[in-house]
Amino acid sequence: MHKIEQRINGRVYYIELSQVQRRWRAHVVTEQGTPTALMPFYGDTADAVTERLAEWLSRLHRPDSTHA
Image (cartoon, rainbow, N blue to C red; front, side):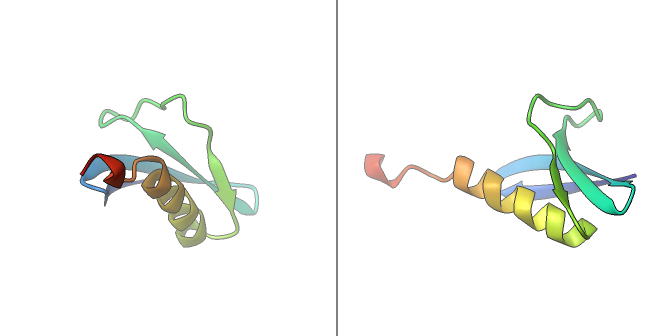
């Protein structure tokens, strides 16, 4: 199991990676390692699944340009 810290749109996320059979699972955890309610993402490699989760978080928490 691996835990990485990733900054996305100015916010810090902690992503936990684990291998489940032949696939990798990535999900967001708190700084203490407690899972959040966000569903996990799955992929063939740790890098690929981390990238998919990071892209989704980036879209989800994109700065709102309509209020600028």
